[in-house]
Structure formats: structure tokens, C-alpha cells
Length: 306
Image (cartoon, rainbow, N blue to C red):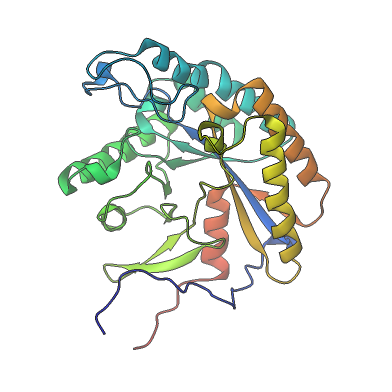
């Protein structure tokens, strides 16, 4: 039988006990994607304006022409949405991870400073918010190097995690290992626990992410329309995982975007969810780097014998 590069089995019916701190039944990890200012734009030499994950998907301006309306929808995220989410999380003392595009933080030092002051960790979301599967190997290597250097200058420390825009290229993970310095990547959606892979004979940790409990649902026809609907979806996800956690603890990832969840009605639903979570015992609200470090300490890579 020829080798097949995908792992369709995973942990199967016997997932490991993650041994979350405090005997938590569930680890809840919230991600805020910060992309505004790094998206496709005529101003940066692209042939179009980005139209994804915004209030009017599809855009109106023809290719090669700036779409000023769409640009301003993105600007809402950096001008207003980020700050509203920051207030929510700091008031409720919730640690989050920021998937930050390097150029976006370069262009808004106030946001970068606020992230650092709040104690949120930064996971590198690429140099720009572009599709890595469209980059050739040399271009992608350059993007990774530029992103690491930029975030190091802007924040004072290098990023330890990586997540590129959907989806990675076949080269991404190998190039991350080649670059070195990353504790993990999140370019996977296939599990509810971290897991190890081997890349170029080196162990590499994957902390899966989600497009499921994600505010991108506000931008899909069959998604959610109100903050209450988003709250219901998050609550139902939490309830199932929390119940399962009595015997098999897992992690719950939540994905947010400043220009989406930073809107008043949507942040209302998010606040309801955080208050709901706080009413439960044995829940670990953590950053993504905390998950990675915990897994490395509790479940170190074990070399498999042939």
C-alpha cells in the first residue's frame, strides 16, 4: 500500500487526558484576528480590494479600482471594534490570543501597545492577510521571515505561534520548522486537542483552530444574524464539551474578528457567553501559548519506534 500523507485517525476513541491546570474539564481559548491594514488593497500594489469577512461580501468596485466602502468597513475594526473587544476582555479579566498580521500592527502602534499592555499573546498571522497557497516557496519563505522580523520590532519579542490566512500551502509547515523559533502552528481544523507531527525529522506541535465557533458565521448566508444567535451557538458548543469533559477534557477554540465581533450587537452576545462560562467551575480560560506550553510540558513528543 502506498503511503498516504493525511492522518484520518488522530486520537480516535482514546484521546489523552490533557491534564488541564486545576483539573479543568474544558480549556476555552479565544482568538482575536487582527488583520485590518494588511488585507489586499490597490494601495499596496494589489489588483483588487479585499472583500472577505465584511459587512457587504462581494464588494461593488471593479477589479483594479479602490473600493472605498469596503476599505472603511475594515477600518471599523481597527478604529472601533478592537477597542470594544479589548474593553470587554479586560473588564472580565479574560486572556486571549491575537492572530496578528505583522503589517497591520506596524500600521497601528497604539493597538500593538494595547495588546502588550493587556498581556495578550501574539500569534503570527502572516506578513499580510493573503492566501499563502497562492505564494510560491520563495515568496512564502520571504513572507514568514518578514513577518517574524516585523512583529519582533513592533512588539519587542518574536512570535511563538503561527496561523496564516485560510489555507496554508503544502510548504507552510516545513518552512516554519526551517525558520525555527515557533513552538506551534494552528493551521489545522481537525481536532479538539493539540497533537504532534514530524516535519523534516523534527517534532512540531499543532494546536488546532476552528472555523466553527467563529464569527465568520455572520458573513455566510446560512450563518447567524444576531448576537443572541452567536451566543446560542457558542453556549451549545460549550455545553457539549463541558459535559464530555467529565471523562475526556478537550479544548474549545473561538475565532473573532475586530470588524465583525466588535459591532455593538455582536459584542453583546459575546459578553453573555463570557458571563455564562464564568458561572461554571473547572474551566480554563487561557491563551494559545499557554495551551502550547502546557502540552509540551505534560505531553512531550515521544519518538515512535519503527
